[in-house]
Length: 209
Image (cartoon, rainbow, N blue to C red; front, side):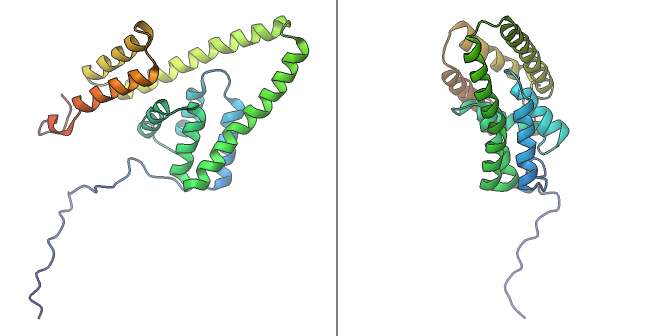
């Protein structure tokens, strides 16, 4: 009989260290391409965040709200458009590098084709067509409403403690009052948030103060 002691058993209640936030669904590359193609073809104006959340979280349930917010935070801190950044991150999460490539192609293709057609039509009219200007103003107003709607929906799930509202206020002040760059404000507020929510500040119950 061997005298080697058996390794200690891991308690059943011990959490998995690498457990994902939400389960990654099995999605084909074709489904990823078509999904982002639809989002790219139907997202008008500046409300692309609303379309992304509706398509990825609500309709297809590829990611959870918490994951969407985390990925959106990454998109905000990286150069480039939020839509293309989100497509790359979600595609990579679903199917790796190939998923990121087809997601990026899907979301960019409709906009590229439509913008070429719009540029040709605008050049032909020399920008004097009153209907085009009126339509653009209407779409812009609707886009603001969509962004506000998503902000409220995400805020209900994210802004829980008073410190969360303080970070929101600091961001608004830094960008709109002090007129600092978004990147600089995000770096400063992000550093403050990391310091505030550092693990050693957690009480025994594990909840933020």
